[in-house]
Image 1 (cartoon, rainbow, N blue to C red):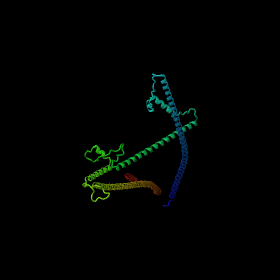
Image 2: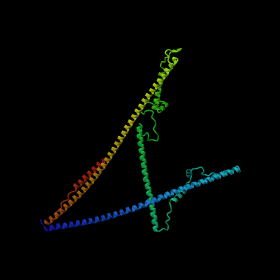
Image 3: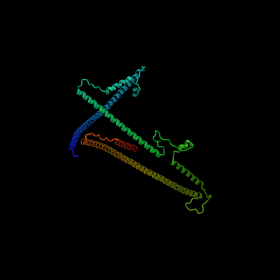
Image 4: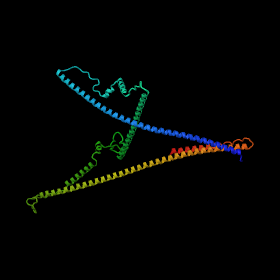
Length: 457
């Protein structure tokens, strides 16, 4: 009923809960203020680091510029030294030559000289041979000299702390610079190796296409040596019985030689027909022929000669006409062949364009499919994260609900104890958490099935 003590206790509990919530809220606000201060400090630190990095990059750029200028200056000085050294060697060689010529002149004046001069042990040897003939001790000595030039002594005895710190900073900057240059060179080498590999692969693909166009094996032109000329089909069963001359003449002349041979044969046949024609001669006449006109030949033989000349002229004209007709036919055939070749080239170009367009479309479709797949994966991931968040919230809500139910049950029991005989009643047994475990197992199984489906995709 409306017991004042019960209402008082309820109010006391509510006030305690409010106080606890206030403490939680204050603690949360303090924690949030700390996190905001930490975030602000990190942002300030990041900004300072950006400024210091920009200054460091500027200093490095200036140092690189100075190093480049110094390197160029050293290269120029080295070239000048090499030129001076070359000039000095040439002058010494010229002096030696002049001295040798003078000695030869003096020897010619004095007479024969039978003294044997010892040659230099390194006479007539190249620099590489001299380098190979050096002993291990000589190589070690040269290595020490070279390292003494490159590795300079530190000389830190008697230096102050500031000087030592500056020397350490200088050495650290040198190490950073060398490591940076090493990394840049390695990346450059990787990029160049990749470019070379790409170019080689592209060249191989072009050679494969070229071989396929020629009807050869795709790997015929990619080897070290050019492919062998096939004089017989690879599907031929019997052994090739042709002689070497026949095989050699297969690749000599071609259509032009065949056409000339055909024309020569045709000309010989027509000449034989012409020479085998029937010739009729008139008998010889003495005196003046009946019906002779002024300007006509004296004898019929002369008339025959004139007729023969006229016939020869007519034959030549006929031959010229035949040759012209044949040339026209040849030109027409060549034009037809050129037209066919042009048509074939146009068809091949059109097919190549269509193939390129289809390949471009396929590439675009693949890219779109990949983009859609990536979007689907991102959506799946977002949905999964949202599901996990919802499940966690549901679990928390259920826990809070159970705790509230427990507290309400406890409070009810206490009130009943106070209102009743004073005998304490046992609290209701807690519900088993088997249902929760079953739900968690089902959720885990669903997650595993989803992961398996993603792997299959």
